[in-house]
Length: 97
Image: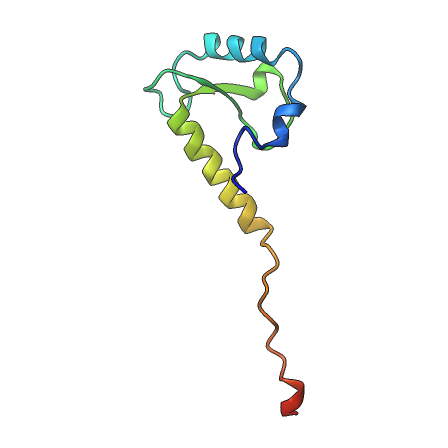
């Protein structure tokens, strides 16, 4: 299953005034805080995977930088908690003992 904003449970955890918070962040940070070149279009949580919606915990960034930051954070989370694989351990086959 694809993981994106439409399938993410994070959307339901946003505060009811999220649209106003987003507008305030984008007004405060009109230029991307990550690249310093493009216009901000996304209100990004500075600390990944938190539900801290204070203005100090948010930054404006452009869509390309937000995608790259999210991809890095997701890769780091996957590396920190590797999934269980279907490979069997290196134990000897019982019929060969």
